[in-house]
Structures are given as structure tokens and as C-alpha cells.
Amino acid sequence: MRSALSHAPNLLSMKKELLFTPGPTPIPPEALLAMAQPIDYHRSDTAVTLIKDVLEKLKHVFQTENDILFLTSSGTGAMEGAVANLLSREDKVIVIQSGKFGERWNDICTAYGVEVILIDVTWGDSVEPQIVEALLTEHPDVKAVFATLCETSTGALHDIEALAGLTRVRPTLLVVDAVSALAADDLQMDNWGVDVVVSCSQKGLMTPPGLAFAALNQRAWDTVKCSNLPKYYLDFRKAHQSGLEGSVPYTPAITLLTALQCALNRICAEDIRDTIARHSRLAIATRSAVKALGLPLFAISPANTLTSIRLPTEIDGKAFINLMRDRYGITYAGGQSQLSGKIVRIAHLGWMNENDVIVAISAFERGLVEIGYEVPLGAGVTAAQEVFKCSRGEK
Ligand code: PMP
Image (cartoon, rainbow, N blue to C red; front, side, top):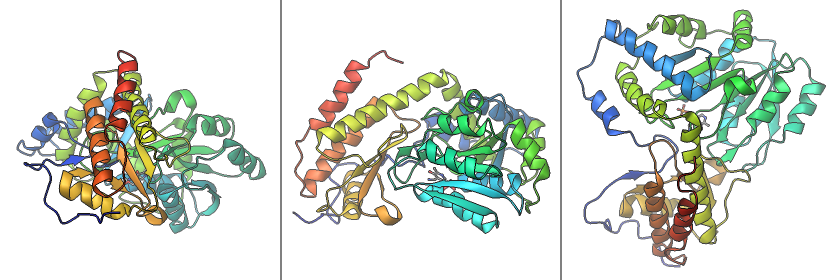
């Protein structure tokens, strides 16, 4: 093994930074330009029109007719808001924890003092719906199941459609964290009967961090009416009512809303099925490339959002991530918590196309060789190209 040359100079003559992290994701130029315009007063007529337009267009991405509400916060704000607005002190909930973000549901529910029945799934795996079903049968009084569409820390996709099949025939709500996977992995809120979906701006929505969203169906709103947990800034009813009027209870990140409008114009220009199909194609190509390089995927059921790759034990994952950033200007995400240094996460999320995947993979190959792990240069790129060639014209 050669040592990681993390202090060596950038290998490219003009440094160009490329982001392959599962949030923040690259931002389209018109959204960047919109943010450079003089700032608007958030109670002006144009702001009212902007807020109404953004909230209407978000329905397309959430695949719902339900109203969307927004908060000026990161995604965790909408997660906390879901707990604070839906639950009451004496409630019992099921939390599916298969990584860092399932853990967050558990942390929030615990912080609010509700009783948590924890389903602890091995990191990299996805929950088996039968386990949820058995617990729901054993505990018919469970108020809500908290799940994650794509567990970003592992890259695993959960079968939300199957979970919704269990909850919609019971008085139990299904609350889904779609923070990373919205617009990348399919989530048919209305068709599947998902009660609550939360997400945020800096992932599939191609906007800087700072806005969080929630969609609630009627069942969920009826539950909100009975909630007795404390809430103020995160009060969903206030945010909802204001949003309907194109208004806000508190000063919003108006600059981000202008960027989001541009990003949503792009997303709404195509069918959401096509948006998801594009993410799926990029994911299949990335996985195919990784396999061609002889490396194992980490997630058993990988999402379209990102690909997690288990690194050979002789590679120091942190050194590899640093090398890629410092010498190639390429930012991948490393592992979190127990996966620190052990996996690399390559996102293909938001404003990404086939060329981006080719760049991400070719740099990955070079980096591996550079760090002293021999892979056949070009094998991953060829595998990805083959996927793109075969799927040309497919939706
Ligand atoms: N849930 C998931 C699935 C995520 O990927 C993230 C962010 N990586 C969060 C929750 C938390 O979002 P934020 O950092 O915007 O609060």
C-alpha cells in the first residue's frame, strides 16, 4: 500500500470542485442567479405569489393533493415538527432505526418523552414489513410508525408502500422521512396512503439548506388537533394556515424560496415518473460500475438517491475522502458513526446527469489507484456507459 498523498498538490491544473454528497447537492445556475437578486420583503405581493407558487409546485414532487407547509429550518426541523405536532405525552410509537436518521427519529421521540418501540435494523439492511406488522398487531394502540424512505447513512431504501399498506387499515399513522430521497426514490403519498411526509431543500430539490417541508393528510391533521406536546416555532397549524395565504408566521428564508422556485420549475417541467426514472438510471449505472471494480455495495436494497460502497479494509476511508477532495476537487461523503472510514457514499441526486456519473466513477477509479488499491482503470466507466447505452430513450 502506498500512503495517501493527501498533502500533495491538486492533480488538475485548474481546481474545479464537484459535489457528489447526498446534500447539499449542486444548484442549477438560474437558482444561483435568483439568489443574487435584490432581496424582497417577505410580506410583499410578489412574496405572496412566490410562496403560493412554491407550495403548489411542491405537491407535484410529494405526489400529493394535500397542502404542503414549510419551515425555515433544516430537515430535522420538519422531523421534530412531525413529532411535536402529531403526538401527545402518553403516546406510544414505533421507530424503525436502520442508521443515523432512524436514530434521529428515536432521539426526537425520546426527547419529547413518548414511549418508543424500537425496531433496530442492521445498518445496510431495510426493515422487513412483517416485523412492523407483528408489532402493530401486538400493540394496536401505537399512534404512529416513524420510517425513513432512504436511510442516507447507509444508502438503503425502505419499502414504504408495504408499510403504508399496514398502517392505512389501522388507526396508526405512517410518518416518512423523505429528506434525502424526495424526487429520487418513488414515494406516492396519496396512492399509497402515507399520512405524513417530511423533506427539505438541499437534496433532490437542488436548493441550498434552510427550508424544510411537511405534507399531512386529513387523518394526520385530525391527529394534530388532539396533540398536547409543546410547540411554538414548529407549530404546523400556524405554518399551514399562513402558507395557504401565501404568508408566514415568522421571517422566512425568502432568498432560498426564490431559488427553490427555479429548481421546482425544472422538476415540474417533466413528469415526476421521469425524474425518478432518471435517478434510477444513474443509480443502476453507479452500482454496475462499483461491481465492475470488484467492490461490494453496502446497502442490501440500495436507493436511487446514493450508492454506498464498502471499502476494502486496507483502505483508510477518511484518507481516501480527503485525497479525493484535496487532489481531485471531488467531494464524496464518507461513513458516519460506526461506518466512519469504512464506506464511501456517492450521491447521484438532484441536478445530476449521466456525464456526472461518468466523472464520479472515473475519479473514483483514479483515486483508488492513487491510494494504492489496484483496480482496472476504466472498468467502472465502461460498465456505467453500458447501462446508459442500453437504457437510452427509456423513461
Ligand atoms: N433524514 C435524512 C434521511 C437525511 O439524509 C438527513 C440529512 N442528511 C436528515 C434527516 C437531516 O436533515 P438536516 O441535516 O437537513 O437537518
